Image (cartoon, rainbow, N blue to C red; front, side, top):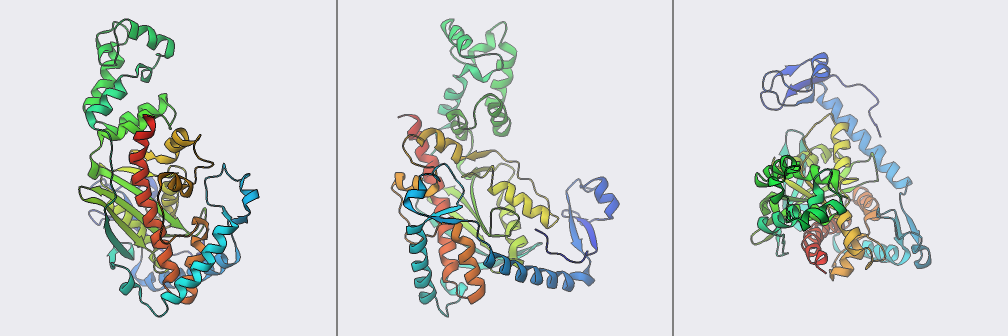
Length: 407
């Protein structure tokens, strides 16, 4: 969705060394010729006011569009049976909908005349792309994974990981005493691919191993979950975003959680007004390290492509090609016979997780629009709590899935 009605003059400069480049130079190579870092777009100083006014106009237009258009439908308990296979929050039970409207009224009353800074433990942060409101909290939630040694043992015991080895050949090789890929290093035929794979294993090249496994196994295979044992706890980045729609609309909240020794630390970057979006997105990007491994729920299809889409909208670029553990795939495989659907709310019920304040994901745009219209932060509180609980739930689910594989 594009809101710009005029073409703003654009310059391109390097984020690292500050060198400036022309449009032709940018189109020839999107990377700095001096230091190799990627280039970013930069409006000319004389046009900063015009750029800001354009964003304000776009924000007003978007508010009107959100108010007119719904991307969800309210269904009855009977109609729900036909919606069970859907993962996206494009439908809401009428009981959920009515409960959310009741909560909406309670929050509006409770937070009337209250200020964001007084009610949410956060602060305004800024970066080269703008500002946003950052909220940090450490939760006592546990996060567990298998050890490197256990993960290594489990992964190399599956000979089918190597090209050319199927179930029948694997059985024959194990009958001959080749019970692991490591032992295949001495096999006259399979020694070369076995040595290459063991080298990746021993150097803990998580991204390379994951790409290898994706080519040989379904993305829901337990071995891909066990690969997480190769990562350090502090390298995990649990990510969840809240948006104003299913595509091409602004992101209004980006959450990231990092497991720590004393719990899980959550950081949320809130868009107080739609002009904060680029600053909030860049705040999340800044939290990711080269060694980070992402954990999401349907993030390979939604969250990460959505972030990339919004980065492109602002002419920005960032490396989001990290090892990625999408728990939706594992949940479908491990719990499909135990759950009526794989919505995160259903998974939470199975795990015994209860939320104090919650709204259906599909109602996030409505609550945010209400906040923009009234200035009352009550609806915003519900969105922030919804996102924070999603992050905590994903950490718990990630840990619980190891138990499910052993049942």
